[in-house]
Length: 247
Image: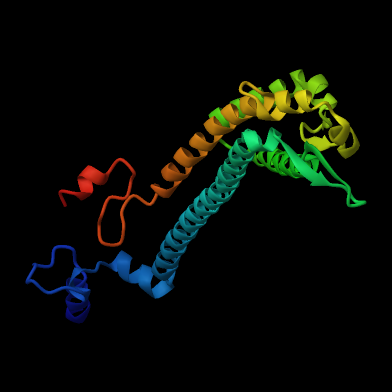
């Protein structure tokens, strides 16, 4: 009987605290849980739940990383396409494009005329880059870019009749295509009013394209700043340069 009492005293919650840990702090209920295995099951369940939470958090982080990466790719495409359109319009606005030159036809005969081959190549480059811009803006998540692109498309549609006289047809998907035969025979005054003159349709497109380009540049800067701190602790947000200067 005294042996039982001695054992009970080892697991009694009233056991004096001598600074030791372990078995002296256990009661019979805890001992029973350990012996039956339920205590181990409880621990396993606890660590399994925490492992699942960590995995789910990792999935969320990974999903955010993928989304950010996709946004960067799409926005970069918009930036590059808009920059190309701006460059194309500037080249078409070059007065040398609309000056008569001495040209040689396929039979070797010389004449003074506009270099329609050079005009066609420049217009073709503009059309291709314009189409790339229209397609890329469809993947934008910027309200400003989407609104500006929509206005640009509407303006192009409004001018569809004049554009057709210059050999430019507006398609149902809002892209444009060139009818080379019409363009080659078009009145040079019409071509210049569409592509080369101040206030031309191309210059109106360039104005919208510039806004899209600015918006994409700002969007990329914002996306780049989402990793707020560099590995050396520097604050990398575009507006954080003052903060970097004092740390």
